[in-house]
Image 1 (cartoon, rainbow, N blue to C red):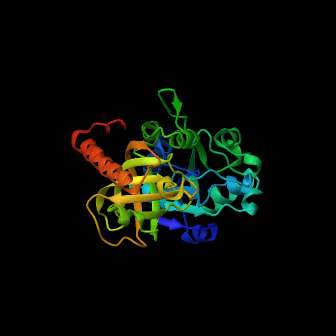
Image 2 (tube, rainbow, N blue to C red; image 1 turned 120 degrees about the vertical axis):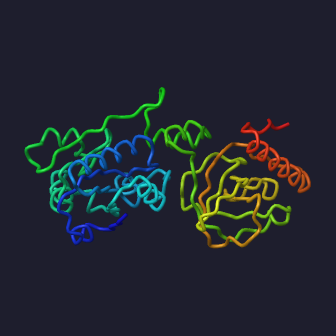
Length: 318
């Protein structure tokens, strides 16, 4: 998959015939996958190259001065695009200058001039251009103004849920990871880099890797069972603690994400990890002393191993 980081790079690529889709695609969820697969199918029919146009950061950071935490940071999105078979990605940095571009100018320059689009495929809530003027409905109403045709992808529902990044964020923040997974089409995952911690996990006999999760959205505080995928391609099971270590710091510390791999004791500093959440084990709590905490972690480990062995949820906390 070819990754282009600016309009200048895309122009230099010399596109002559493409099918294009546009969006943040945060989560690359079931609805996004429908739009992207539709784009790939139409590209094959037109003997054209497929192009996904996305943004490195969330546009709301510029438009509203604040953006939601991402479900999938850009590098994760790029990997998911590649897995879907996308040929080209134009990953733009959303700037104040770009925010001010009228929708018609954006469509002419990006879709027509730079990408030579034959067809543009847009999701039901995709907007572009100044004041979010442009969208599939806007393009369809002005079909005579542009050299490409437009396909409007309908919204996707799973049960009573409209599949959207907003609804998935709400589900993750509420700890409804099974609901989030249904809309994502896969379990929720965190990405981060292992950084130096305070060594307290090793002190307890359960060495942990402390993750810098790059401002990514995270589930509520507690202990989870997960599969950890390393940048070496290895997959290992792990306990994951999200919280403020109340037994040590009385709940006044900064929230951290700590990963205890069940079958690994090597050096992970500086490594990039993907943490795929499989089950929630218990809420975060304060223990009276280190021995009680050590015993509880040992039980968490056994509960997770039982879950893995029997496919059953961990036992309720007693």
